[in-house]
Image (cartoon, rainbow, N blue to C red; front, side):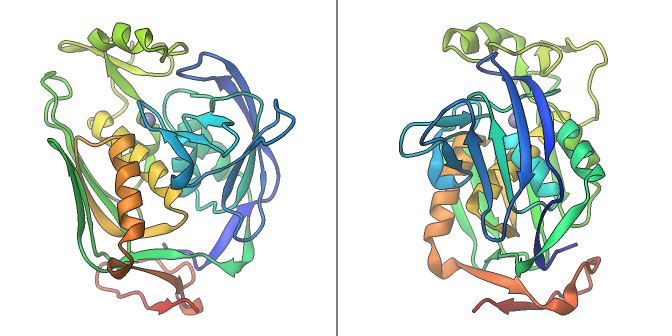
Length: 308
Ligand SMILES: [Zn+2]
């Protein structure tokens, strides 16, 4: 389904929890937004310069999580799972008030956010949503990592491949079409790490709030979490979730087919900068009214109208 018009929530929604990396408690309330506002964070624990735009240009660090920062140095981190939940829940505009520096990690996935958003009535706004259509393939390589996007006029599609020496993760891959596929397994997939990396991550001051309650931990050939994996491709699925959240920072809903190998937040952010700079390879569109909420099937072509 491709929505023609922008949407927001109809009433405030609150979440509380701890930050994965800071270990700090956070209370967060998401308020309805207005047309063309996009997603905005507001640090209510600070008196001034506390607004941070959810945009790829605001990304100040992409090491293990995505951190946004405004010109005054005010930050909010680990925004990616919440952004992915807003993406799959079709929410375009919202003001997120938070009293700490990091979005609560919840259970390490986007499941809690999506469940609550699904129960919340959405409001259709008067302005049309802007889609970014890819006209020509664009690629980026960084050592063994690579990411590319090629045209797909009807959907946002992600094909993600991981390659780990660890036997459980191994060479896991999955391919998801965000307009056609059931996204339950993507939304429930948790952030993960290798047991052997935990000390290294803690040494650089991260993962202070990490536990088996909010992350999948793999030690050689076993998953340390009691219940094991939530789905067969939980590792690749989580990377797809991260990528969708990070792509929302482009400011658009992207129509294109992404192929990514071994990527992460940093590669995605560098790629977004490149993508949005390649003006001849992309175009920004609004959909015609007659395709409102039409379920897409592969044989159907969606009419796209260039925006004014
Ligand atoms: Zn993640």
